[in-house]
Length: 223
Image 1 (cartoon, helix red, strand yellow):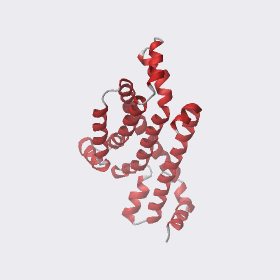
Image 2: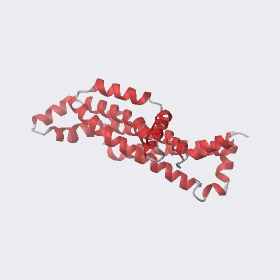
Image 3: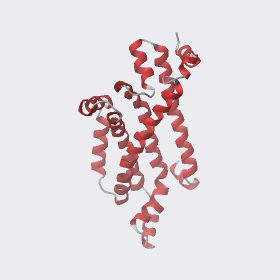
């Protein structure tokens, strides 16, 4: 059987569209896990990246932390968290957040740090506080790169959230992991197609967000 035939068989089976194991329920769970992990990573990464980028300090430390975070294997960290904390959603969230923080943190830092200093100095000369300089001048210019960091983190989370199936949680992982265990390649290919489709949809969402929130002039400079 070729891949296209397996995909057609998976999505054409009405049993895959109903109940707890149906595509809508699994997809909703996967999106929920991914959004929760992205929100937690953004709460950690954005403030640190904005402040350090604004003052231009801590770049080496951030690079070291980012490298360490990327080097940690998500599945290995999941196993450690389960052994330490037991089963549940929290042990799954930790490796996903650890995976997502580095691209948000480093990209936000670089985005703010590389803003043209001329308007920043002019804003300070007008008596703006450091917070107003950051949010009124630097963030609007840095927004395209900040969104790119969030986009990268979101796609990485969506691709990795399948590990939730290893601890008995839902999402799209049971299709892939359970399908491999059962040698049901229709489920494996169907689950992989859903993950890929969700990643593409995420890219479209961030593209639309960029078009809506970033001014044309900033988009032109970023491009």
